[in-house]
Length: 235
Image (tube, rainbow, N blue to C red; front, side, top):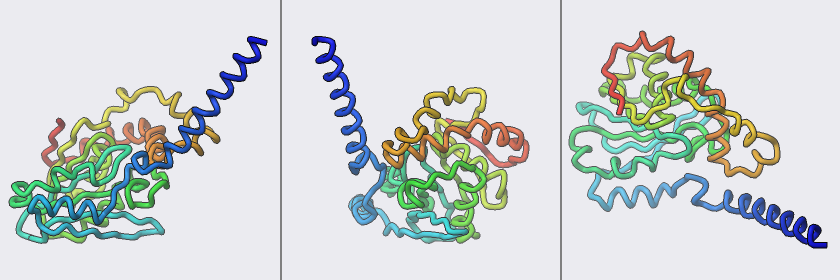
């Protein structure tokens, strides 16, 4: 009888955990998204220039960005977030009026995050960088410095390799750029299994699914490092 009670309690506890995990993943804080109007208001409260949201579309895919400033004579600093995340991860930089005196600012929602086809995984660095390149092509006169954090690091590196005319410098902050240093994906593959994947919050699911094939993507990128002829800073 005691064993049966113990089994029932254990089963009930597991069911409660699964329910809380599922419900928690549907709450706003787990979506790694932001309210565009609220973000713009917060930036303006710092005395910043007017932030402008925009989107670009290609092959059925949509990418969203936020730009501050429209001065072709100044450089353009482009911020690319990690995984999971969204462009509001750079809110403090986007609100920095000293920075915006010296450069226009542009922040990107990477594919699958924020408002760039949220919840739809795009694991190819080539495709991700191509979508960002499409945005940068709208600002041909400006020198472009790309800043990428974590997963944003290999994305901007791939972009610089594939579109050298669009990039004048890279700043990579704690980037995932070494295939040898990537950890084992065993637990990530378990997380990608049917029921668990379905229960996982969309942003975390996309994060998991884009990191699983990352090692192979990085191995290709390492072979192309020699193509870079621009300043690269790794922090």
